[in-house]
Amino acid sequence: MTHWFHRNPLKATAPVAFNYYGVAAGPAASKICSDLRSSRARLLELFTDLSCNPEMMKNASDSYFSLLQGFINSLDESTQESKLRYIQNFKWTDTLQGQVPSAQQDAVFELISMGFNVALWYTKYASRLAGKENITEDEAKEVHRSLKTAAGIFKHLKESHIPKLITPAEKGRDLEARLLEAYVVQCQAEAQEVTIARAIELKHAPGLIAALAYETANFCQKADHTLSSLEPAYSAKWRKYLHLKMCFYTAYAYCYHGQTLLASDKCGEAIRSLQEAEKFYAKAEALCKEYGETKGPGPTVKPSGHLFFRKLGNLVKNTLEKCQRENGFIYFQKIPTEAPQLELKANYGLVEPLPFEFPPTSVHWTPDTLAAFDLTKRPKDDSPKPKPEEVVKPVKEPDIKPQKDTGCYIS
Image 1 (cartoon, rainbow, N blue to C red):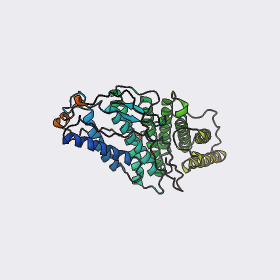
Image 2: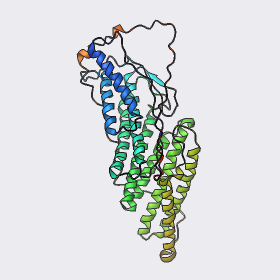
Image 3: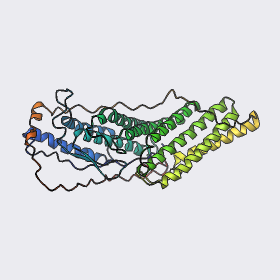
């Protein structure tokens, strides 16, 4: 599979000990705290473990989230929140704003932030798999499914959990609705890239491929627009990627639309469509250079050298030459001055996020376990000296090298 995807870095977090001396009394409460500590550490380890697969990620994340739910929800499933929701302070960095952490004393903040990283892991797993040589059909399906899973998680966080935060996210932070929406739409667009590659491989009708490419370009444009009001210092590189992909798939759409027009004996219009494809391809090529030169979160690469990019350039060139030859020998049609309007709607292959729900509260949380946490015994902070600011170390992500023949770069 010849895809290249931009990836922002994983969120980093400060260690959490879940030690509540005096508050957590008895073996059941101590066991819950110990399990929270170990399951959180295990999940953080898996984010950078190259041997991790979706089944391992789901098991590890479900284990932690089910325990964390006891800090958020009441055990009787009423709308009342757990008495432990605000017992622990959590710190997380953001994917765009470097290593300056946000902190909230709220278990919902932890649930959302860790869920965000799980979604990011699925996008990075999809990238890694898409970069393999000789990817199988099953692996292509897994790339597709992983991107839809990530989209579903981002969507669920945005719609069901962000509104529950007591302290709203600051502008440009990961938990702001605009950023989450951009991540959702980007995942949908990239999953459709896999659909398009499959449709081309199976030689589906050019009309369907053109429509899917047009819808994918619109997704990229929508994600780019969502980020338009953010500071260029940290959003410019991501936006270059989205603009690049928008131009790239618009070129794809015009190229395959031109094939449809040629098949309908509209050779003049086909030539004009291919000329438009050429124009958008040239725009994408210029944006490839700009992307490589733009500073900001994400990989530093030259997309124009990748196979996925070069293949389209050859396809546009060869299809245009074919149309011009046929028009010179057979059709003799006038070439319109205006490019054809792309009013294409795909009836098949459109991607929707997979529905996602956090797991229910762990069975280890019982009324007796919860009662063993006595908040009246929390130590009072009488120290006049402020505690030193804890440094949140960045996540050291594995350096994935692209395979020789795919032209893919995996961040």
